[in-house]
Length: 457
Image 1 (cartoon, rainbow, N blue to C red):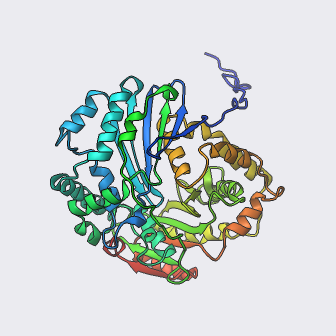
Image 2 (tube, rainbow, N blue to C red; image 1 turned 90 degrees about the horizontal axis):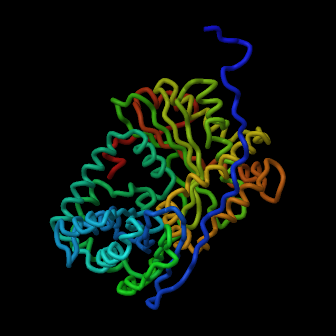
Image 3 (cartoon, rainbow, N blue to C red; image 1 turned 120 degrees about the horizontal axis):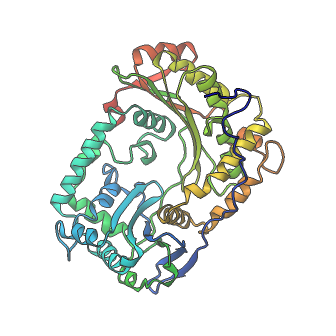
């Protein structure tokens, strides 16, 4: 068969702009108990999500009991008063429902996914979990064993250890932000069913909580069952996160058997409330947020030191966190850290084409980020939990779409220069200290070396 070499076998497809998209509209109401409810109609999403954002952040854990908030979330569906032992799980499975949750610095989130045709039964079980979870000695002990196993796994996970090292360098010693979410080796041993029940009683309350129900037909669902959840309490007071001003700039966790150098570079910055936040998000995208970004063009494409790096600006409850993460061959690990810091603090402004690509990517992936009821419900719960409107996403995306490299009140280059302090980057590394320490020192980066056990203590 003859194949013509002067033209491709098929024509190049024409890429057209995507259709207009907006965040689903939200309906806000308040139950007689005072619980805030947000309904998010999403036609076609037959799996409905019920998610509750609780004022139960990691900072609410008593000192020495780090990991308690997550323990309560993980154990809450193990057993309830009306459905002891495995019968609660069996009741959930019989209607095709599933429970999930997480605990973080901004609060705890718990939720149930269920086909819309089984919503009433699932809502009844969800309220049962909220009001009558058992947190038995046996169930809590099993989850404590899970936490021990997770810490043991983390001690062998390079990128996780690099993140812990960066947090340890960035946040004050002993602060909750500086410690692993699941807890530490000593704190996990202090956890108990009694402590779990006390935390649940104090923080799993309607005070400051929000219920989000997202999916098809949610505007017509009867939510009166949630009026049975009446537990009240006092708002959790969380001090604003302040980065440390002392201590080492570089912390290296020594793993002699590591096959690569895992790196995280972080600094605290502004959050969603700052007018420069949209431009900062685009700046981080242009610097390292896509495969075409500046860091990837140098570290991946030009030098071949890595399969790729990532950079993002993540909002915290009252501020933000800029993070660069990547893994590199050990022999070039120190060079990669030095080159990353050079790029992050360079005087070379971001070009218009770099900014345009990062901006379009940030706006273009929104429909994929929020393509399920679960993703939408989680975002709404997080926004309302920090005092923002549930439809904040549309305003944010409009602000992102309007950013430019060098024009506007908050240009992308202005956000980079003013909101990312070149002297505030803190570095966490996990790898072979014997090779990395002298190489870092040659580049003016003196590292404090700790073991994985020290990092998790």
